[in-house]
Image 1 (cartoon, rainbow, N blue to C red):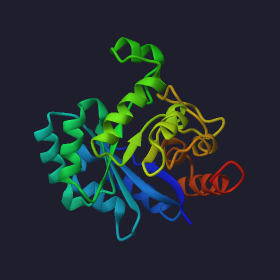
Image 2: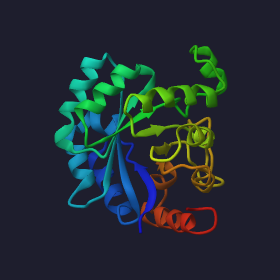
Image 3: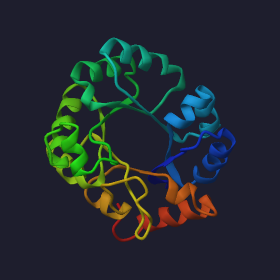
Image 4: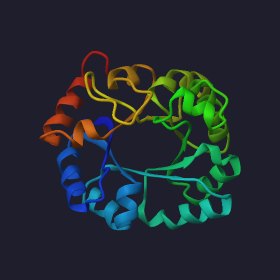
Length: 231
């Protein structure tokens, strides 16, 4: 059984991303292709990452524009058959609904509050905080508009699960194994804690892809989630 991890293939190097994908796919459910890789290589990034496997594809493009543009962009991505596609919940209900309508087979994931933002950052950009309240409000907007997944930091998982109940996939970046450097993430937790609080899919990049042997790193992490504290 594969672990509920989306490995972030965050590099513009397609060959490197493909090597990472081949190394981790036996151990995880999902691969994440984000802006850096997709902007450089487009559809080839998805095709190379997925290969001939049945691994799930998390297309993390964080669409945010007027509803007509987002709907058109989502429709253009249909041939890639993403399992998840991110849109910013701050774009509003009509924008989210446009993406949902354009890709009915895909789980549109509303991004609530970026994990890189501190409480001070959230206040400065004009979101009424704290982060848990801001994420909760955006989550409700996204789910009411048809989103079937949400992206939030591990700090907000428990609040969002209580607010929206079961049936919505909670995706959590900002997950770091105990002792790992937080990098540019401000609101973090361990994988075990995120799962215990109600997360369904953990987005993990550098602790795996930055390891000397990503296959060993991800296998060790997958085993740790199958033990006490995992689900």
